[in-house]
Length: 259
Image (cartoon, rainbow, N blue to C red):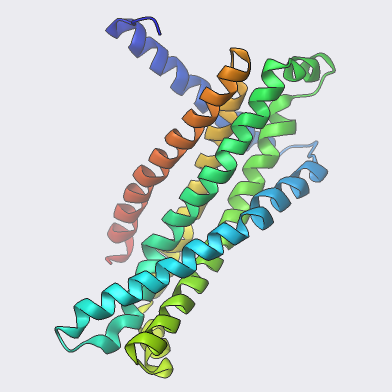
């Protein structure tokens, strides 16, 4: 890899941000104008949503199990084991559910988008689409963006639900906490602002996963080696962005709802 001086490196990064912003902006604009490729949208919803359910369910379930086990152990010292349900529910809905679901879907689908579009780029299929009068962003990026944002919202709900259920299973079988006590505390602790905060994050995460994955796919160069590099970059960058945006959204929600 050739060494770049500071000026060249800065110009490259600014150009990358500009290209990404233009791609994301055009993809969002294409969602509100015709034509729309519904067959592609349904296909991506099936691939992203249904295909990601097993890993999301497993991750959410065992996260809830571990969270309940660790929480009960710590709360036992203060005689507050009956507060385990509320702690698990708040942690899953506000933070762990949205973030872990976003990271799992990012690892599975951002890499898939980058590799698929990267392969099309290096084999000149993207250029062929342009030659035939088809906009690659409308055909390839916009459906993936819509499908990812839409399906990640529901995947997060599933992750939250199975996480709370996993915590309930551990609490009732290993800790001896009554089922009714766990459910009642979970329900009492969750407020409107907590649910809004937790359900806002997957909208941003879905946008990041789709746009970053497609961006690195469409800028792929260098044959199969370039495809591998683009896939790795897509996963790393989207994962980092998800965590950073999670912090910003959390701070915003605390400012709005106060908790």
